[in-house]
Amino acid sequence: MKNYMESKGVTFSAKVYFIDALSYMALGLFSSLIIGLIIKTIGEQAAILPDAVNTFFIDMGALAIGLMGPAIGVAIAYGLGAPPLVLFAAVVTGAAGASLGGPAGAYLAAVVSTEIGKLVSKTTKVDIIVTPFVTIFAGFFVAYFAGPQIGDFMTMFGSWISWATEQRPIIMGVLVAALMGLALTAPISSAAIALMLDLNGVAAGAATIGCAAQMVGFAVISYRENKVGGLLAQGIGTSMLQVPNIVRNPRILLPPTIAGMVLAPIGTTIWLMENNAAGAGMGTSGLVGQIMTFKTMGFTWDTAMKVLMLHFVGPAVISLLLSEYMRKIGWIKPDQMTIDTGGK
Image 1 (tube, helix red, strand yellow):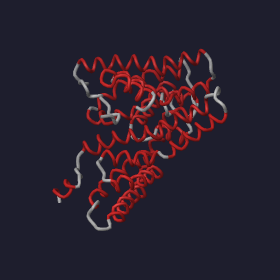
Image 2 (tube, helix red, strand yellow):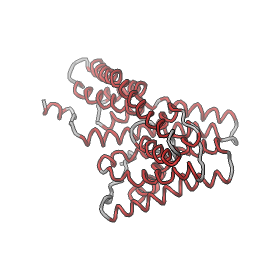
Image 3 (cartoon, helix red, strand yellow):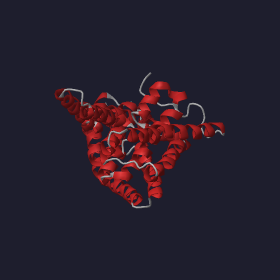
Image 4 (cartoon, one colour):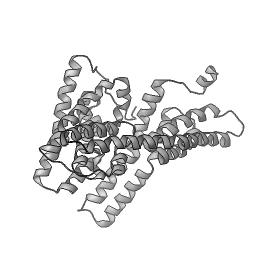
């Protein structure tokens, strides 16, 4: 059995499922939800463009966002070396997982269905029927039964955020920034949590700071490994690109997380920062968090200065100082934050 599974390219390995698969999931997420939000925001906020052009961008962005599940499914199947029929069927399993459990559901359904599909691929004379059927059945089965569990987890996680928003401003700022920032980097949707909870006001402002700290922090502290491309991919794309590296060395989470926890209380007490649910869980992704901050607080120089310091400069400086100290004591080693953007 072991030899058969190896011949089919199925290897039960933490590296395969928690590093390789997560890495490709991040690429699928970036190629659909993240870029879709960026495109949609351009259409909604670019007042200088003709209405017809804005509508075009909004429709294009909405389409990309709606195809998040299929994109994740295909990306994971490709990353796991799936044969063609399994790869194409993963479009369906990723969609099923996303519809019932969000990005995490799409990940689970795609991984399981891809591995099972690989096992049956090219084993019968009616492969064109059997392989996609088994792949889709396995993925939908997992999505159907695991989806409610993922939903329960999201509800539980949301209750933590709700509890945090009810605490005193300093405690609330620290907790919301930490939890929402970690959610943004993890393979769950911080944007979905923010919308589900309808975060707004100062709580949403703290969430934005925590999310921005993750993205800007990782972008800056990994610059020596990833250069300008990595800076942009993480800084205005998604810090989820670092998930495989976090699995290898969880300590790299400390600098951006601490930065968010330090800065958020400033945004809840001294320089009050507010936002709405649409921007609370986005951080600097496509600058949606910043655009929604301006939309909520007004397009003023005062708001611009707060955004600059708490969303960009503060996270960059604090994260860099902490990461350099961690490199000095050996907690972060060279190339431990190199990301895979799909290039060869």
